[in-house]
Image 1 (cartoon, rainbow, N blue to C red):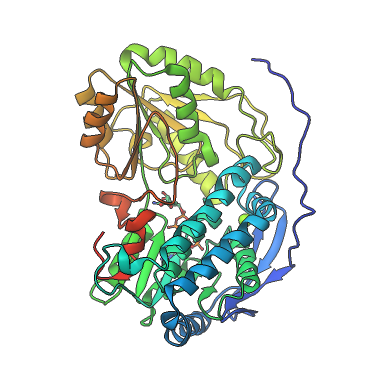
Image 2: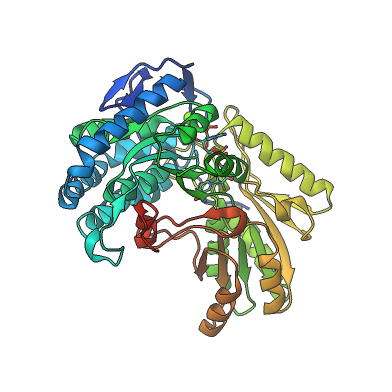
Length: 480
Ligand code: NAP
Ligand code: MG
């Protein structure tokens, strides 16, 4: 297939003002870490970005102690109205520094600049604006007679939406009156550290937010710290299980946002071109590194061939390459480890008998890349139909009746999200009602809004983020 070549249109890195090395952000200051430092790289070319401090157990203790002190002395005594002012200020500073944050995110994570610029960073600002508006209304929102914060929140986030997951965690925690110690993922700490600079700019009182960088062990120590009252985790189901065990029998509250294997269901009366765009957005957005990705396409048998033909044509037009190029649709895979996992599961898919098709695109010499891939002829028992690939890999299954579509969609240990494509409103309502998924999109996919709760059933975790529901997770005794 031929299409017009685009001239390169790279976003300039000149806006970045990166340091060579970053310390831990504790009690309002960047301080040295006493753990093992590490390097964060750009997954697009494996180039070195910055040296990052590693937090030792003592450092985590210092951070939690700072958060406790800030809670007792400052934050718990401040009015909701004043807390809200800080959140509004943070939201405005995120907007002011939006371009810088987008470039840093694409550099460190590998996602296309058009996504970090048009999706991640605007949503980060909207999350802070949204929760800023809640801070002074807690007493009037049916959250109980005297809604109170838990105290210190220990928060752990993954690498797929580094700054957005930070916003999902920090904005409601602060609005509800908690203080925070947050650990970003090891491969994507950069925007959390720039965010720490924003907190200094906003004059947020020292210790209200602390950021500790490090590996998985840093997270494990944080969730076990006795002074942490509330744990919020987003990441894999395996680590989520470990955290649930660690907090069992303690007074800690916990919310877990884990993996997914969402069904994206296309009925024969769906507007096909729109559905194809929705399928592409569902699984190839952010290289498929999306917990709620539409990774299992369930397509009605009568339109299977047509949908797959159009999908392949569409995928052949996607541009894979430099994340900082404004024309790029598919960026880099976040790490060598994640690339190895995607390759392994795809090889297993082929070995189990599914038919593999890969978009014909040039793969850059350096960095971690995986071309958009579709598996057809997938059976429910195949690993690629059951396991989360967390990459640009779509598994296609078919169905004949709505009942079969629902049964297949629910045939998974996960239950985070689902999509329905049909012309009939009545069918949308009937099917959505029977899907065991926390979020169901109809004739769209991967839409996020701070006012809308998000979270899963079964092995996709428990608790909700976003909206009023997301606030209750950070308040004592508040019912969702
Ligand atoms: P992960 O290995 O679970 O890591 C998530 C975070 O936990 C990272 O900061 C990680 O640190 C830290 N961590 C690792 N081991 C830990 C331990 N024993 N105790 C405490 N913290 C620990 O997951 P990932 O590979 O980064 O992310 C991919 C997964 O996240 C996918 O399964 C995806 O579905 C899920 N996810 C879910 C949502 C949602 O909202 N439901 C959103 C995004 C992603 P290091 O980075 O240093 O290892
Ligand atoms: Mg990185």
